Length: 270
Image (cartoon, rainbow, N blue to C red):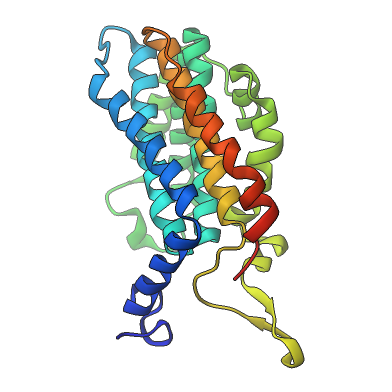
């Protein structure tokens, strides 16, 4: 059997750890699977309105959210919690824009404006490249032409540039931003707090840098992901009105029924 020491998370030993995590967190991953079943049903039944730009954006962001949620589960099953938290943050960022546009379709202009603004910044960065071979065929005149083209598109969009917290406010999800988004930012930026994911108490040997699967914070990452994706379903249904159902509330109740066990019991073991 290939070992973690030799092959890391690509080893057979890591696969065995995955099975152990699935046993310990059996109820939580069953809830995740039930949540995923709802998501896939939503995708199968979704008929995109290509004549409505805002609805097309909402549908596309929902697809992105589902894929991100499934990737989160795959990582958490393998004990890659720190990496999973990066996806939680990504999922929330997608949710904010999706829910805001579903709530106020005119915000599609802000979403489009953000694209052109980001494109301008990316093209401007080419001016700062140090190695000539990086520029390829992008001559200075061509760079300026691309910048002016995107500036014109930005002006046509009539949208204001929104920051992430402003998207959350527009979506009515400020609490999600101030709690879930902020607490998962350290995983993305690799600041001092993120080092807690890799430094453990080695007993008499003192602190040790740890490499390998961990379940520290696993349930919270899984739970936050579920909260975000169920909210995404609500946003999708707002943009694409359908008959009201109790499935989302039932899933929220299932998750809540596991909170005392996983938050108060085994959470934080390694």
